[in-house]
Structures are given as structure tokens and as C-alpha cells.
Amino acid sequence: MSPHMEGCQIPSVPKIAEPATPAGDHSLVGRLKAALAYPWNRYVKTWLKRGYAISVRQQGGSPQQAAAKEMAPSVPFVMGDRVRVRSREEIQATLDPFKELRGCAFLPEMYEYCGTEQRVFRVMQRFMDERDYKLKKVRGVILLENVFCSGTPVFGPCDRSCLLFWREEWLERLPE
Image 1 (cartoon, rainbow, N blue to C red):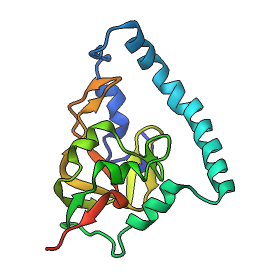
Image 2: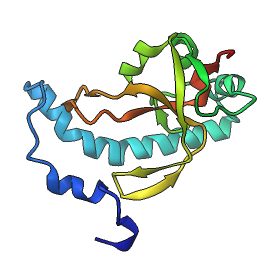
Image 3: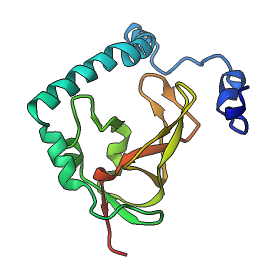
Image 4: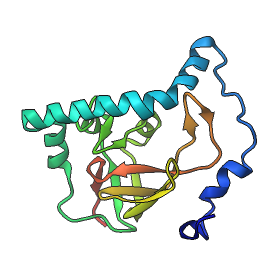
């Protein structure tokens, strides 16, 4: 193990995991989606996003970027702030064709939190990206207390209980 990863469990994950259990969808379409998920996300989607970003830059911005800019908080969030997750419509107005805002995906399971009151657990500054084992810096991403991912439609349920990433534009500060 390299010295920069000492004290982190991330490199152990492949060793402790048992062979993959079949996801809920055993149909041909479900198996095909699972098989193509990695190459699609790693290669095809990457190039599509690059092309989209170039197009938006040439046009001088997008309506989604303008909507997100209007929703950005004037004062940064801090741990313990009470927030309301914006409505489905407000959030959708900020999403690009890939259902992302500044690279942060808004997952279908996140819609159930729209309109709810939550508390800021942490304002992220960095995180370990398990895809390449690199520590990455981030701005404008918030973790909410007790708001966890439960898995994906393609790969099925997951017991890890990762906190979902929320863009600050998707949240509205509530008075204390």
C-alpha cells in the first residue's frame, strides 16, 4: 500500500468484497444496462459532456446556469444550518441534459427530499474519489444529516449508506 493511503480503508474495498450479487433486474435489458454502465459513463458520457460544455461556452451560458446563479446563497452554509430542499421544479431548472449541476448529479431518489427541512451535516471541501483513489477538492457541495443513498436502479440496493451530495443551489436557508 502506498504511504499516502495509509490509514484509509478505501484500498481494502476490493479485497473485502465478495463476488457481485445479481441485481434485481435479471432481464436481458437489465443485464445489458449493467454491462454497458461503465463504458458509457467512463467514455461516451465524458465526450458528450465535453461537447455540451463547449457548446454552452460558445453560446455564452445556459438557462440552467443562470437559474443556478440566482439560487446561490449569498452567505455560505455552515454545519448545523437548517435548510429546505428546493422544489422539484426549482431544482430541475438548474440541471443540464445529464441531470447535473456543475458535475454534481441529482439522482431520482433525491426527489423524495424536495420541500423537506433538513440540517447541514457538513460543507464539503474534499473527498476521496474511489474510482481513481484520489483526494479531490470541491466547492458548493453540502452533506445533509441522515440523508443517505440506498443504491442504484442498475446495480440494485446498497447497504453502505453513503451521504448524498447536494449542491448549495438546491438548498434554501431557513431562519433559526
